[in-house]
Image (cartoon, rainbow, N blue to C red; front, side, top):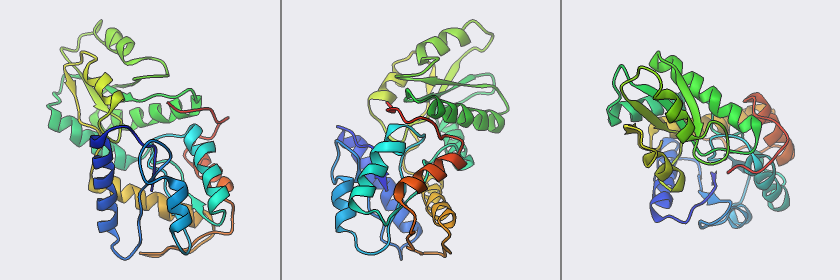
Length: 257
């Protein structure tokens, strides 16, 4: 599991909890957590230490620099035999987690809803977030606006201002982030009446990690059974590109915020 990394003990603890939940889902498989930057252990070290076939699942919600360039380059340099899966989103399992987090935060039937994501300079990554917003809209049976805490339009403040010209008495922001940190703080401080907790540690999120794992193996032409750790003869860059294409997020790679 390859996550971004953060300078936050709380963020690290949430990712460690998610990794533990993933391990409990398939106890017969070795499942390690590594990071692309900031947090420890680094992906490069973990890949060098792990013996046998490897599947790398990005714990990232959309494509961008880390999915298309950063992660595949590390894997190609250290473990070119490894298979790299696609990013986690969009997917109905994420929609289920978002709906539960909103319900726990006190979502009401008349509330307007924003899906609040980090943001990216990659148009395809922004499109993937908007696809996740459409899935949530269907689940909640109301419009959902995708908005961004950093790069991307509309920004969270602009989206709130637009919604407040309408009839909704309150606005609820669904946090489309894995863990607390800078971007979630921006959502909380946006002035929205309701902001849900990040996706965090959840059985559906753990199931999605294994789904991306199995999907990558199948795309590589492998037969993946419960607890399979089969690798692929395809290069990590080829697999990352193929997986991104399936999710509709393939584009010219530029850095994700």
